[in-house]
Image 1 (cartoon, rainbow, N blue to C red):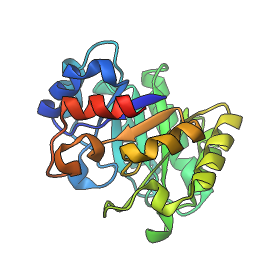
Image 2 (cartoon, helix red, strand yellow):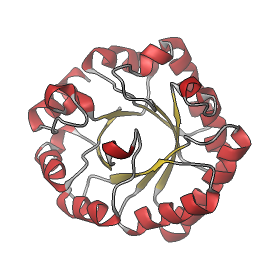
Image 3 (cartoon, rainbow, N blue to C red):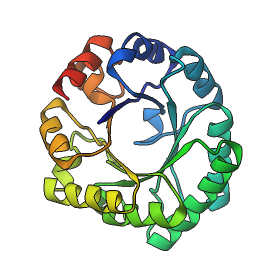
Image 4 (cartoon, one colour):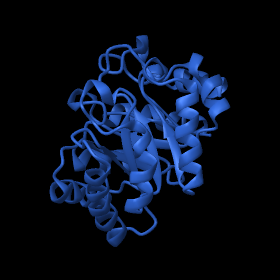
Amino acid sequence: MRLLISPDNLEEALECAKAAEYLDIVDVKKPDEGSLGANYPWVIREIRKATPADKPVSATLGDVPFKPGTVAQAALGATVAGARYIKVGLYGISTPEQGIEVMRGVVRAVKDEAPEALVVASGYADAHRIGSVNPLAIPYIAKESGSDVAMLDTAIKDGKGLFDHLSVETCAQFNKETREYELLSALAGSVKKKDVPHLKEIGTDIIGVRGAVCEGGDRNAGRIKKHLIAEFRKAM
């Protein structure tokens, strides 16, 4: 399993660089703009420069609406800024067809610029609370659009995590379908150390974490710390 950690500024990215031996992917986001809030292009560049060369940088494009052209342009911007995992939160997407249309635009924008980059289609375990597309449709959306990774996160950060909304069995089904499509799977959503045994049982490829490696477990007010990253990796 790969460990993805999400700093939101250069200071936190430098802390991730100190903990590089414990993590696999550095993911740039802006938590105050949502679950998968997009940060500025210059922040992506700064974090890319601060991150060891052998660690890929990921960037979120936001909790996006059904505006395929807008999202494709954002994807190109993140790619040019140096991100090599491009994550799209399909927040305003209500059907698989809409999801495929958005993600096809992202795939073309990203791959034309950087063929080696990986495109991540992300749904939400709590999709029922925001009227978004069924989380179990995400692997199909990823496959049909040519994406590389199918992911689940949580849209509303209120203390409830991935397994509060979906059972371990449902997440295992998500992972199984993703693997059958020969894609990578990623699970996130207020994931804590106590959830690691379930994630290992499921066999997900990537675990996405922020709050669990922040002081006080607070993804907004807390800051990422090296020792907390090390503790999470030890749990894995």
